[in-house]
Amino acid sequence: MNYASRRIWIIGASAGIGAALARALAGQGAQLILSARDGDALEALAAECGGAQARPLDLAQPETLGAVVAQLTLEAPLDAIICTAALYDPGRVADIDPMRAEAMVRVNILGMLEVARLCPPLLRDGGQLVLFGSVAGYIGLPGGQPYSATKAAVNNLAETLAIELAPRVDVRLVCPGFVQTRLTARNTFAMPAIITAEQAAESVLRGMQRRGFDIHFPRRFTLAMKLIRALPYALSLRLIRRLR
Image 1 (cartoon, helix red, strand yellow):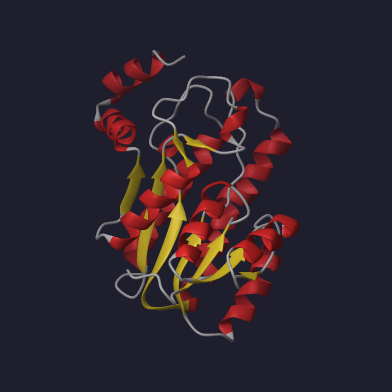
Image 2: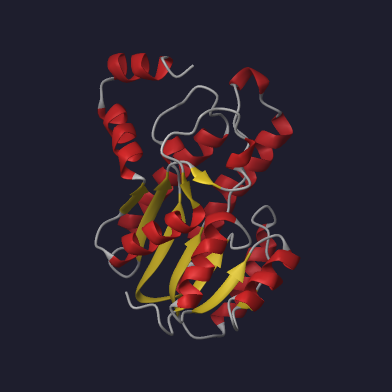
């Protein structure tokens, strides 16, 4: 896809991979609509991206997504919708804070379901709906809950949409490994094959330009995780236990 003059809506654009995608796409001449909870950060990014529109919303409050969708319905069709928005707070199951877990479910699962329900009609025929799952959703990891569980749900949702919306909408699932963001900065463990948000954005845009459903990176890490997932549980769980 040549991104010059393409209309692209990024949900979760104020930081991390979303912000890096906005800057990369603006550099290629895309017409951007940027959404996130942090209105001030969003306005600053929109100004940096030269004419991008800032449309704040919070996936924890579905009415705010519906309001932006209603506005965009009156405008030209979109070429792509990219949803990177998510809350991140992994931990051991025994240590889960129920309120934090509920917030993650509300944003990472229910919010993404609302994106899946409301946003596809905004796309032109052949437009792309790009949802961010995670390698963390491939298989249960020690210390990964409840974030891993919500991302497993997103991975599953994208698989369903790829069937239900074909051929009019080109659904893509993005599963990053470890990426340097303000969220992963909270991790206290070694993160193998970690990359920058800018490198992640480059991988996403390359993946969107190719055929195929699954965009995952960095491959030296994600392919190993895919292999573990494909093994029988007797082997895969034995390998994962070594990560504790």
